[in-house]
Length: 152
Image 1 (spheres, one colour):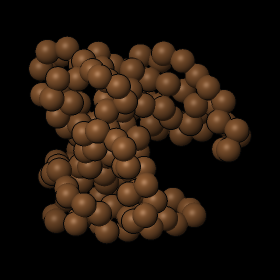
Image 2: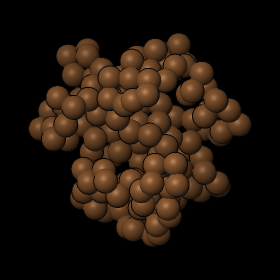
Image 3: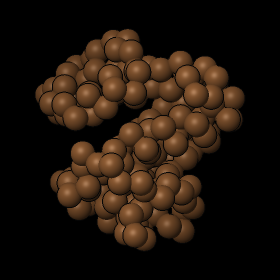
Image 4: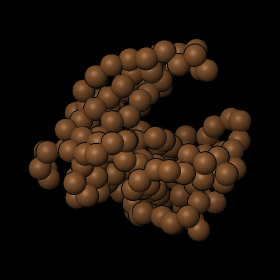
């Protein structure tokens, strides 16, 4: 297990997020892709994971509705997977959400993204539904976790 430095970043640091995203996903995106997604969102949170000052992952979330925080996107660079970086990101985001009054956190994972599904189960998320994603031609599995008290 690698202990990452997790920090909340500002919009000025978004280029690091865009670069990491484009290292993992295709087609590549630019800063406008992220800015559009943030428009009209309340409590946008971007957390960056770094090892030895090298960005290795990030998580982005925002308020879905009062008391529910939504994880929109999580990325861990391929050479840093299976080192608990994803777990550290999700736990850091959940701690932030709990400390800001959210009672639940939710996210969706494509059925073919088995590592994300495993992470959800390992971090005590419940499967609360599914929906078909026609754009990706895949099933999205919906997860939710009650945040409860710290340490639970």
